Image (cartoon, rainbow, N blue to C red; front, side, top):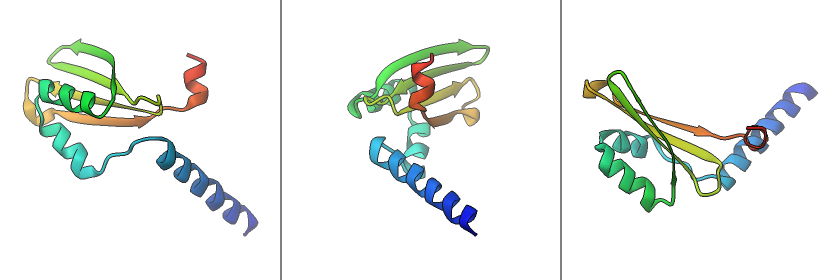
Length: 101
């Protein structure tokens, strides 16, 4: 029982720290970002103070990645030739891993 309570306490603290330190988006916002073209997505990220991180071009897709001003999260938009495959990826960056990069 103590292990379960400890586990929930740790998960609660992690969740709380993530929400306090990083801007988060709702599923509706992420869905709206996915519907934007790449130029409009870039403008939206700049308006939210996200900084350009990387651009990757592959066979049939373009990926533009932006990171938050506090370096706590990163968002990327995949744009494919077949628009039905377009998607948004949002991730939280672990400070410990960032320092080791």
